[in-house]
Length: 222
Image (tube, rainbow, N blue to C red):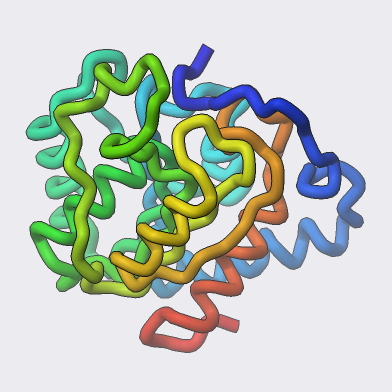
């Protein structure tokens, strides 16, 4: 089980991907393709690396996205994880757009606060794990990644949060969005928005991300 999948107390099927017409899915795929012509879309997983049922894995396979790789997903080192993200950003010939979940969202926010946004176009931060304030019993596994930034991030960012996430409350997500000057987006009641939630391609999240990119990136995405 992915520790950061966050089993929800209830699941709202309105946010699931099932039942979307094929035309809608084709439109989303086309929008990913057009965005990918402008930026390097990089998935940044959290602890354990986002398993096969995770929406990041579905996006990787369906839309041809790249994934950040770490040498150790189970006992993460902040320095090693930061170095891997630095190497991936520096290796890209285009601006990078980070699509991050949980501890990966924390990594991305801290990286941006330390390194700036010269080669990063923006970041979509899904359910950043609230290392500083969560009472989750497993927080000690990632305590070394704290504290979270308290300053505006240097590129356009969005935080997408769930109403029943055991790692991040909605009020705290709003607070972080204010501190980071991020857009705040609600995902519904979908736990930690990870492997334990039956999200499939998670078109709601994809649509929200693509709309954010259209509005906030420094070029026009149709």
